[in-house]
Structures are given as structure tokens and as C-alpha cells.
Image (cartoon, rainbow, N blue to C red):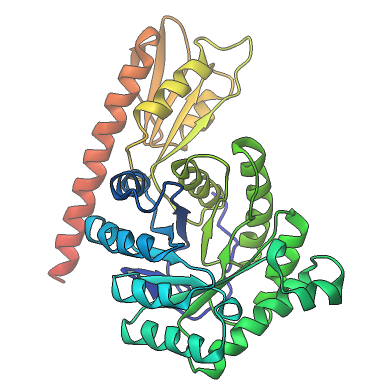
Length: 372
């Protein structure tokens, strides 16, 4: 087995509610609600759907005082840490800090005078919450736009350091920062430059990445490259799609790099004329049925005996396709034959049983170590 060669860069550890970001903490997955914040029921439901599939942190836009009041109600009804996204009006930041926000997403430079920024920092410090500075290529300061002519990595870095300097002057270090662009190369350049300058945790993302397919590809290239360099402590996949999809793609990127496990890692063949069953149809059904599984495991589903045995031996559960019956491997060993026409039902049953076994083993290990 190939050992994961990625060595994360050392960063300061901060806290977003119950989730730690940076240091030796796992890389966390975030998403953002796209409901009307004042529609508390709809926003809570969307947050819960994301939390159910593994989202560690959720961000909620708070554009008005009415939205701030709604945010307070939302906070009471969910357990996942919430980041309040605020622009311009420092009074909104003060309000949500007192209403239970776990993190304030702001740009200190667009809050106004340093006196106002000082009040926001004081509220964050009083409520023991963190901040995120969010720099975007599409909203750089006018003087920086004039200086560089167009968004560049250096331009994003200068904007970021300008905001960081404000918080440094106020002796506030509990913050993470992002320098996002919609261009893959610009995004990677900006994060690499910034990571060489500070030790605060970095929030990764390709902003306005696009629709589901193209946005996922762009995000995987940019964030995957940065993560392989050891850069990144938390991330959001910004898609013109439902936020649940952002969470799924985020975990898929981390799983592919061996940085985090969350649910099933499917190994499936692309299918060809050798397949003994409809691999694509089976996999679509399995993904839908097993979406609720959070326990990490590898499940291999291969349509024929050419590559099937080799992949099955490396998986928790492996299927080697044949007709009328397919061969099942469990933990790398041949187990039994199953009716190929009943693959989806049989695999789901085996996976759920494996979840029980793994969770029981985990509980026994916890009990054993607690007595040592």
C-alpha cells in the first residue's frame, strides 16, 4: 500500500464552535446556505441536511438586522457550528456575536473605521469566537486594482495582508483567511504566496467555480494541488448547486488524497463489453441507498474477473462480476457467491452489517483503552 506522502504545513489552531481548524485538526468541510436567512425553517432544514452528510461547519449570510434575529433562532435549532457572513455593517457583526455565532466572516477593511473594527474584535473576544477574513479576486480594494491592473496572486496577497495587519494591531489572532478567485492558477498562486507569509489556518476555495460538473473539476484541480503541497486547513467547494453537493465533493477530494475518510470509498470499473451486469446502474443505486453511511470503508464493484479479484482483495467488501452468480470478497478473502440479479440488495445488506461490525469493534477498543 502506498503511504500518503502529504505533509501539512504547520499552522496555528483556532476554534469554530466545537470544531478545531488548523494545527493537527482534520481538514474540515464547510458549505453555505442558499435559503433566505429570514426563512428560519428552510434554513434550518438545509443546514441539517448538510450536517447529516458530514458538513463540519455551515456559513449563513446575514445581510440585515432582521436576518441577524433569524440567525439567532437558527443557532438555537442546530448543533453544527455556524459562521455568520457579514459585510459593511459592523452592528450586524456585534448582534450575531451575541446571538451565538461561532465565527464572523468579515473583511476588516470594509467594516469602516478602526473604532468600528475594534468593537467587532472586542465582541469576538468577549464571546470567545473566531473570525474569517475573506479576500476575493472580484472585490479587491480600488487602489489595489489600480496598482496591479488586474487580479493577481500578489494583489490578493496584498489585500489579505492589509486586513491581517488590522487584526494584528488589535492583538487578535483567532482567525483564518481565504484568498479566493474563480481562476484555478490565480487561486493556487495566491494561496501559495499567503502560506509563505503567515501561520494562521487557511480556508481553501475556488470562488464562483461554476455549475456542478465544471465547478467540481476546477475545485478538485486547484484545491487538490494545494492540499498536496500541504496547504489548507478547511475548505468549501463553491458550486452553483445545492450545498449538500458541495459537502460531498469536498469529502471526495479529501478521500482521494487520503486526508480524511467519511463514508464509503467506492472502487468501480467504468464498464465495458466484458461486464457481467450493468455496473453503472448498480453503482447509481448503491450511491443513493448508502448515502447515509458515515463509517469509512472501501467497497469494490467490478463487472468482470479481469481486474475484479485484485481490487476485491484490497477492499472491505469486493464484488467480482459473473453470471449468474458473482463472487464476494470480505476483508480480502473469498467469501461466498450471490445472485448477480440481486447485487444492489445484497451489497447494501453486507455494507450495513459491516458498519455494525466496525462500530462494535470501535466501541470495544474505546472501552479497552479507557481501562489501560
